[in-house]
Image (cartoon, rainbow, N blue to C red; front, side, top):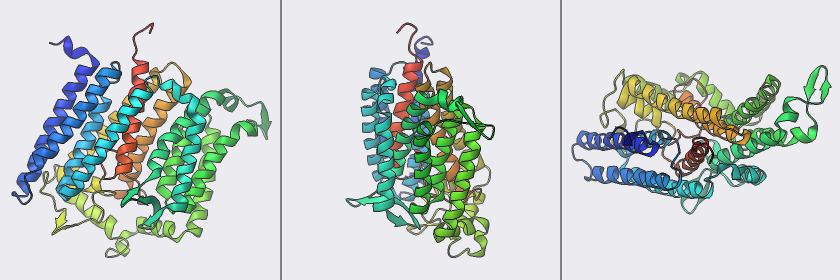
Length: 432
């Protein structure tokens, strides 16, 4: 029995069973707390969730037998907490979220089957780069403005956030480009004022991506999304070259662009003003962040329990958009400091597993891909949590795997599939 549990897939299954127990307990707690005020669909949602992740486990057992045994359960745990709280807010939203999870697992399966050898993606690096720029440009041109930021495109009654998919494509492009040009970027042949600089033809693709991030900042009026894309670029360039010159130069360029955006886009300035002093307008523009801080404080150390937090007043949430931007505040209310810290530790564990894969990979592309994907997910979680706790200005991006939103869920399942493909390559038996 103990020997059987040593295999990666069996450990993964055991962890998924533990997550399933949390799912059943969480949905049951919400149902009991509502005193049967809603239809008895709690167990149906829990059963659907368990079935979906067991299906993902079967896919991995058939295709990626050497994949990391902890990444899928960690993603399941994050998704479980988010789905429980979304169900607590609105059962219909939970039903829709379940459908998005189904689509995400379809993409997950497609990526796992198509890129079992993840190094094949390196040949598609420029295709991914162009696709990322097209998605960001489409958002800027065709996007619908929501809460001052233009991050969504309406299609068939649904809102799609192309930036979530652009994030993953951007990582693939940068990993492939840096793999091919790492040496010329690390050891440039020419020097200017004592500083080594690579040839413009080698630096131009990166400058183009940096420029696209700055244009996005002005076009969509959102500092958080631009900061996310820009930070992914800087982190991956530093990991590939080890040169602080690129980091310092990139930060300086972004700072100048951000200052220009503050002057050109009133919405960005409004977000900064709200961040600096939300209590100046607690009933208008500062209402969301003030309510978020009160809700987090109300949770105390151990929280009120699933379904028992002060989240709803009638059919309205205490915090506007609680199921999307402020889902972390709801979690902190009902699970307290302990639960909120635990959620952050789950993200930390996910990033740790990804970075460990990067350190073990035997080729530059796979190393950079694993590191870039892990950083992208971890930094996105940091940005949104920092926003709802007033550490940074509030952004319109989502909490990965937790927030309600189809684009985010589907794109992050693609990210998870790529990391699992990397882990299967890294953990393959010697000689294969």
